Amino acid sequence: MRSIIIALLLVLALATAQAVPLQGSDGNSTVVLFGASRTPLDDENATHEILKVDVGLMGAENATYQLIDADNIIHPVGLYKPLSSGRQTIWFLCSNDRLMKLINVTPNGGAPIYINWWATPKASNENLIIRYYGITDWLVNSDEQAIVVQVRVQNNGTKDLLVSPENFTLLDQWGWPYQPTLGFDTEVVAPQNATAERVKLGFTGVSLNSRPAALAYDYMTANQILINFDRDYVPLSDELVYGSNATKSQAPAQPLPAVAAPASDQTAAAQTAPSEAAQDSAKENATTKIGTSIKDKIAASKARLAATKESLDQKTPDTGENASVSSDFTNSTSSISA
Image 1: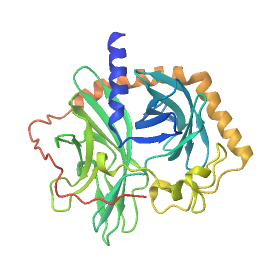
Image 2 (image 1 turned 30 degrees about the vertical axis):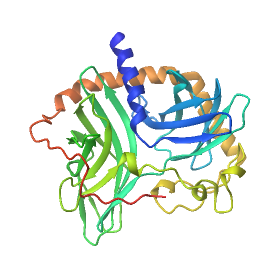
Image 3 (image 1 turned 180 degrees about the vertical axis):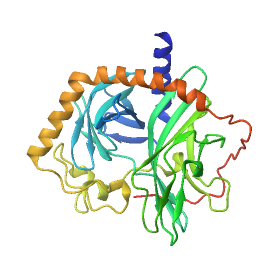
């Protein structure tokens, strides 16, 4: 039991390193979003997953939180995990792969604070575009980490593109490279097409001292593409979140205005807002799932992760044999998705 608690605390602490912090204030209270990561439920047919958001609150004892996705569906908080000095991890139960656009934080006795969500980082060269959707699973024990990330590859060239997990490399804050040990089946992507769906990459044997800092495609080659998490995570623009004729100061609590037409895959799910009845139904359904079963689902998910860890250990490569360090992530090109 003690080891499970330690592992959980490590996961909660490490989840802070996935994006540039976002911040908002009502003049008295300040809210900072340090990062977010996702955890699957213990069911391969599950249509929901847990989204964990690392939040800091200053100037108020407590606040209420609402997470708004690209379809204007509002997700209430399912669980709070207090940390220290106003820091906490907040758990939401969301549909799988849901794109978010906004969080509404209302400090006790204060005004609502609206903070635009992170845009999907992307990087490209003349032949392809890589989009990074973040961490979808994170295993930690006393010796190592196992990290699963989600990406999508778009062929921007004129010839078929063969894409496999071996094309990708995860880099820590010092530029140390980790190769994937788990992943998707090799796929041929036709010109002007993308992978059939978002694909996942699993990295095991990652040092506990390593913080995921970048993801490279064709690392250390002339065609290298690199996404630097510390640099390439930026907030969505007000135009994409509120529409071209609205501003952040005009945002109501609910429902939110429809999102403007997307210019990239980050906002591909942002379309006309659903009817009020449909939105209320979806909200009620999500709230019921959170209120009645999220603790059981979390416990089951932890059990699944523990069971999977043994097989991950068996597949962990000797990363030290061929490792090389690139401290400044050189030879990269990057394009930020609005």
